[in-house]
Length: 407
Image (cartoon, rainbow, N blue to C red):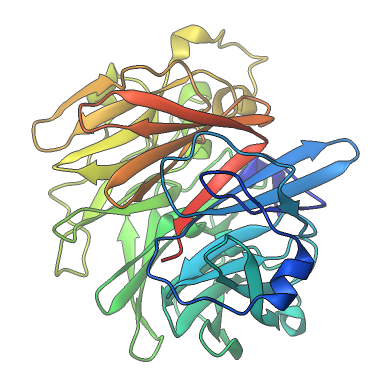
């Protein structure tokens, strides 16, 4: 795992069981209690705490979005930089130090019962993080392999079908190597799955001016199309109510336009609902809407409005000593709301400067922002209201980076 891509490393992990009253259960309870059928909602949030002695990941489960605190003492441990995902009412945890994915049933009391495990060791993986995985549906998932390949596996049967190539996807262009997007750059729409790819150097500074978007058929997992997209570093995908899909850049491709003359400008592309082509009439930069500043990580919210991270160059001395990480990792960004229909934008009320690598999740029509400190030692969880104002819900130690609805 590249430290540049995730901005953190980890070597040990813990799982936190959380309810709104913060009551947890131990391993013995899990072994004696049978699974309980329920229709109550279940959500899960993961956060990793880093230290010189090691690292710990806490995977929380709870049945309300009105959580106001995390108690990290209510914990079970997973080794390594564990990651989470969910599909069909089941919670999945990717081990941080082994190429394994475990599946869990969530009981009403918040405890977890393991319900299957698979290993990707035969494919040469040292770990199998779920930020490299796309859950297509309850019977199909794609785990990335060697950036340009996929390992097909079934979340229901916990069986692996094997690796699949992406014909036509070039591994190297103009001395830059291909990189797959994380789960943030993948989306499922109808009978097709979409995944972004881009080309960059070993430092994630120089980017090819174009990216590609692969379209896979859910019917047979084949590659249907590779679309050329005229934007660098596409690594965030988001979908609106009508089924339009938007792809934008992650923070890394924003550094070169600030530091290097002639670097490819970042931009936003769209694939219209019902289409399998780039909407060339839509492709645009959001810079002009936000004071001609660099932008990253556009995410659609609703009613034609999205959010995007905006870099404030005036807050940083730009000279020969400025490093790309000063831009991509520093608290020199603000979150703006963007109205794509009206062509207007404004800073989100209530938020101070943030790191550009923010995460946002919309669960049950409520949007939550996961905003880490510059050193990723803490994360504040905010809710973004329909009025455009953000309200802080709670703060937790470590880097909270995944928030999913299990059922």
